[in-house]
Image (cartoon, rainbow, N blue to C red; front, top):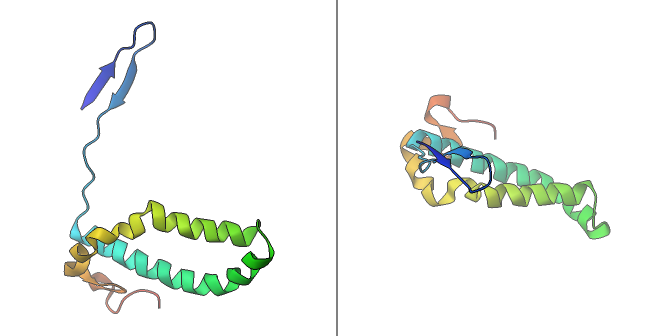
Length: 104
């Protein structure tokens, strides 16, 4: 739905009112899979960057640590609250359409 807002003494602002986002079971299964893969990546990276964080306050290690944290925070931990919705499309790390699952 399009709406025009008029502010006195200024040009009109055009925009669009957006509805709530909807995620279906298949998409949630992908989020579950992405969360599991992210956890694996974090387990690989953390032992490599943790010693560097003790010696330097800034640099690549702190950037990597910050980005890992931001991914979790801003993804809502990959829609953690709705994780059970994806169960009908496969187990985490073993998606039905991928046969035995993704990377291990």
